[in-house]
Image 1 (tube, helix red, strand yellow):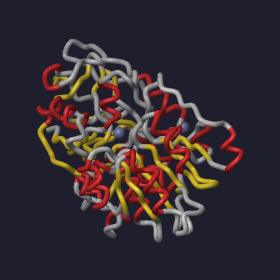
Image 2 (cartoon, rainbow, N blue to C red):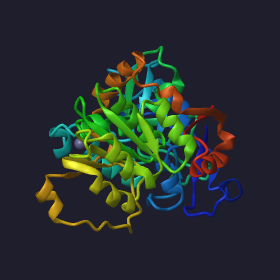
Image 3 (cartoon, helix red, strand yellow):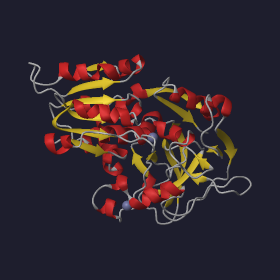
Image 4 (cartoon, rainbow, N blue to C red):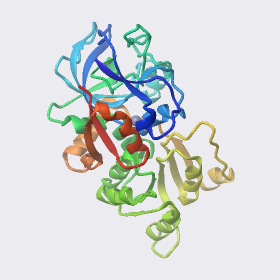
Length: 378
Ligand SMILES: [Zn+2]
Ligand SMILES: [Zn+2]
């Protein structure tokens, strides 16, 4: 099978010239106990792929990249009896063990064993299976490695969906939907009539906008420097959109009691991955409001905030990994909203290209020219 493999992080842009991802031929692994073999139907490029490629997210190399995808189950290993060949699946980038502290407390997105396997490039079910033609170990990316014709993954890395969900749509319900919708509905617990501001209108931010807009009576403010992204946010249900410099003015104008008092948003979602943006969000919150941190800033970045405001005004800073989603529960729940037209995720699908164009795709995503570019891997 052909797989897109990263051997060196931090190559210079443009990526179409530095070619960080090489298409290599790997043997198709056989599923071990507790694993499934999936034919990848669509795989999308996500900013967290870029974070590995540019070196801001350190992962063991070489690594077969890709974590947001849909596929068809081809074969199941021993002990897998609730998934069958032919099932249509969404790939999930945190396989949860069901037994650790996080899993037992109902937070599988924070699974300790899943996080350890993801950090080491292994699968939840055992050591990495991928090998180069020379027999060298190739690490798995978040238990998925989606820019490949096939993937062997832990059973816990797939959620079965109805066979009529298009592969293009299903793929986006892996990372972007779990992260963006979950940030609003699970982490932020947005309630009817509340106000939200979303910073950063990539796929995750736009998913957050859609999730917020379908809650009755909400006011949704969308912020991004790029005018095309702001226009897309309005199509996704945002009530108003502006540049980062306009954010404070929009909050003042669109929240509060209508007389200029009690302004501020109930919820701010930071989907940029910037310490400066996190800092800028806090003063926009109303008393008791919550800031949900979704983006992944570079590890060197720190924030400086007036410490008194947390106790003084009851505001909260909430980290949100994978939107605090429970994939087995939430992917069907989010797909049900999609079926009613309340989550028009098709708006985020820019185009579909062959895997051979993956390095050009990295440039397009880094430049903000695409939201979700999907790849056909076969
Ligand atoms: Zn666990
Ligand atoms: Zn992602």
